[in-house]
Image (cartoon, rainbow, N blue to C red; front, side, top):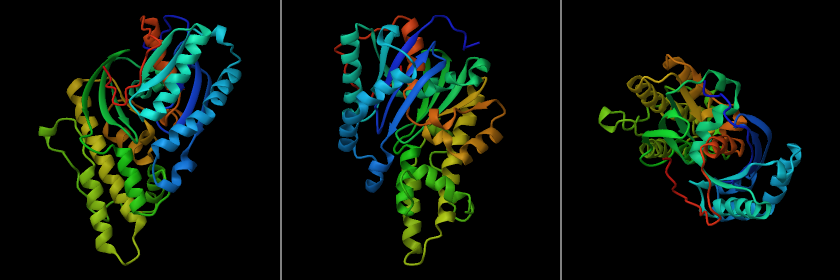
Length: 340
């Protein structure tokens, strides 16, 4: 079983890839001793999306307090830690720099090993922080779907990933935010559209399902769908928009595309289970549709582990650490870091 503990570790993890300032202490890659998140959602709501420079400044303001709270909640001193882990990419360069510089300073000052972790790998490893980890057997298929990412990965062991496909343009979460703004819904758009959809008719408008042809493999595209919603709202004006129906129809198109590609990949690669990760994995309709369509276990982390958090970075760092990875103090951020 994949949750087998092969070494004892206590890792302080830091995550600042976007607009959450987060720190956590993780034991053995499976136990959360603390998980502190300072969200900036309200700060960015007036912009209708994350404002990178504002996000970076806010990280600077709160990161020390967040790390301190994570250590206090875990009842840990720095001497109790085995290493300091931090997200080095992908993400917003200014935000990433705050977290990486904090981690480098702690590693130098406390004489601890430093690990730079891929943000997407963190999302994939979030399932190892749940009771469902006891049942995981490789290979598994993970759909990472968030504001910045829509990717399908085949995972054959810890640290062994094959990228099967990804978005060719907008990520699903980004499309949710932009369509939410078109419909006059609050930021972030994902939860707002999900809520509005409960009162809407998903068949009211037939929006396009892009790159569904087999020639596109497991790739996704959502820019055309976003444009179709824009055109529909323009046709409906100046009348009052049927927001619930538009939201439900848009969400149905996104969900159908995500599910169809995932189901096909699961069949093609003979996986044991399908995992959902990332902020959009919290979407009610996506969870229900995936569980109905996939004739395999479908596992999803709790909401706090779907959105950006440092616990998932600590889980990924555990496996990297016990396999000998160490990074030097000249570690730099990589805003477009691929998952190898």
